Length: 154
Image 1 (cartoon, rainbow, N blue to C red):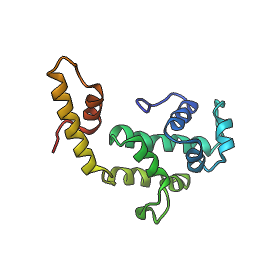
Image 2 (image 1 turned 60 degrees about the vertical axis):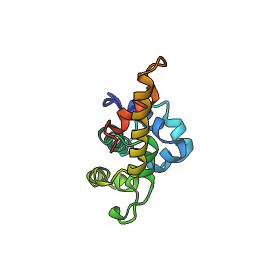
Image 3 (image 1 turned 135 degrees about the vertical axis):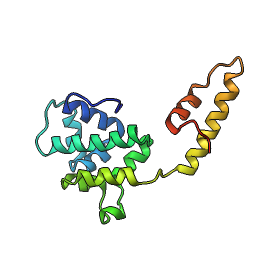
């Protein structure tokens, strides 16, 4: 999910479906949930919907891959109001054609769970080191947590 840029708009739409619930995606794209369900089978999308899908995919990619934000934090970012956007949601601002403003915001918002992340990172690092020195082998969950949050424990 969100590893490389999809080659079609329908692939971008499928990745957004993996991030958002049907109701959340309906809100983000300003459509009814029934419409989202019908769109799943489409290969092409009308304008401006295609543009919104691409813009939302791009911002989600920045949050998930570049900034390594968790999916639930990324999802909430899109549907919550932000003072920096005059109380509007990033989804609304993207639909208004101001995707660059949302990109600036997602890159400037501090990690919402930074203290919790440091704790998880330290715990994951400790579990990884403990298990890697026993016959149990490598703790893959701990390794994934280290990969997502970084090795340094702070």
